[in-house]
Amino acid sequence: NKVIGGALETLKKAGVTIVDIDTSLFDKIQKELQPKPPVGFEYKADMEQYFESYTGSGFDDAMDFIDHGLYHEFLDRFFSLRAFAGSDPTELQSRLVKKGRMLINNAIEQVMAKQGLDALIYPTAKTLPVQLGGLQFESLAHCSLSASSGTPALALPVGFTESGLPVGMDFLGAVLSDERLVAIGYAVQNTLTPRRAPLTTPVLVNGLAPASVPFTIRVNNVVEVELVFDI
Image 1 (cartoon, rainbow, N blue to C red):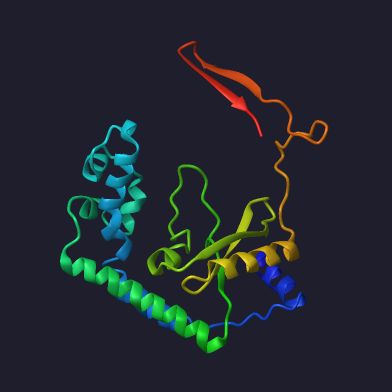
Image 2 (cartoon, rainbow, N blue to C red):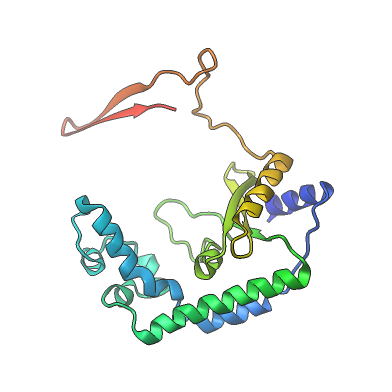
């Protein structure tokens, strides 16, 4: 919140008009769709399309993937993957998907038109990520708004926490406003200048990236992995 707040204040000083909006309409729609999230009905077809594109995966369908338990149990806290992987959506479920997108789209258009907004902005993630092996007890990302509505969204870096973790902010636009959204993102990045070079970024050689560095990792003389570090 501190990083996001600081970024908003910087944008205000640069002339950007920030408007607090009433989110009750979005809350109402989310509550209505929560028992049957639209994105869940697309899971089976999307996974099988992925497996068909990458034949080396070793899986033919989504249920085979689920049966092998190759997903984190935490995902079942939101909705059962098995329930969506076993069958194609019914006609009723397909209508619910269309209804959900229509409701969300209408809400976005209504709010943006009422307030005269170019974009909706919100944190890319609500909470800091937990350490490896921990459980994220809150939904980490806000990306579902764009995914469920089909509207374009652009995630931009806006700063770092005191511990050095990057913080992002999403800009969501109306349908087919992609070009406008990219222009907004370009202006925001030039205003905030939030980027830092990674600690592992090597020094350029005569203005060019240095040569690749190959190296090998061996584990107990049993596993050997050859890797290449390049830019």
